[in-house]
Length: 358
Image (cartoon, rainbow, N blue to C red):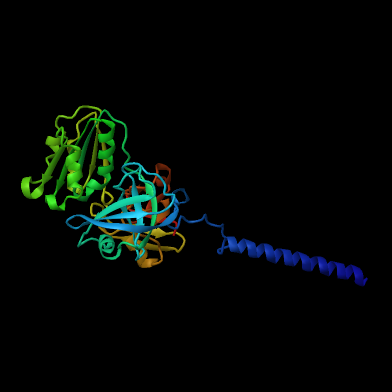
């Protein structure tokens, strides 16, 4: 009788051991078990946009205008890029800022960026000017291009101040190809306008370049610039928001408009009212005031939520949206991503309530 009893005990003990192991695995997949496991959160990154982080050497630092420095970055096996592309710089503090590539796409092993010091900005340009010196290394991501030069019958390019940086490689490419192009370049003064000598030489022979220095002639007249352009013309504009708004308003029918912003449209949220955001995983609800970003409101409850650029460019703060209508204001997400996620640094709610997977 002892043997069958022993066998029964062994079977029961073995079954109990297997059950405990299965339970541990189940709980590890969902700490809230027996509730269903929630899908993985976006948690501030997108696999589609994951890019290699490279460390490049700053081999040259040059003042190219009043308050503007140019950095030459060198490294091995750098990805090729096309005019209009930008690079993410991971600054020593951890901030990530985007700067247009303004060098030569055919120069292997080298990226060139330029940035203007913004005294009342959010600290990125100050860090570039004060801490990035020749001989230092810096982490970069990219390049990426959301401002590509497309085929067109003719081109009109409008740049304001440091907005010339993505335009400059386009000018070089168009001049080399024999395309029909012209440029209007505005700035506070000639001394503040980077790359002015090179640009004037590019258009010297046939008057393709018009320079409008504010201290000499005021602001560029967008309506006059675009008044006589033919259908099929591609209009490219980069610069301060008022300049881009004027170009947008003056665009003739039959022409295409391409804009590159320094910050996302409506990034300050001032033109949107208050709403509430439910944080699904934590069970909390936060109030987002008019003019306050979702990111700022959420971080009052969840300080660990990741973010970086706060302009809708880098994607660090991307979060999944479970309920609610999103007012997208970023410059990054695809249409598919916008169906169920948002960048909480700039985008908002079209109704009174959003539910985030946080």
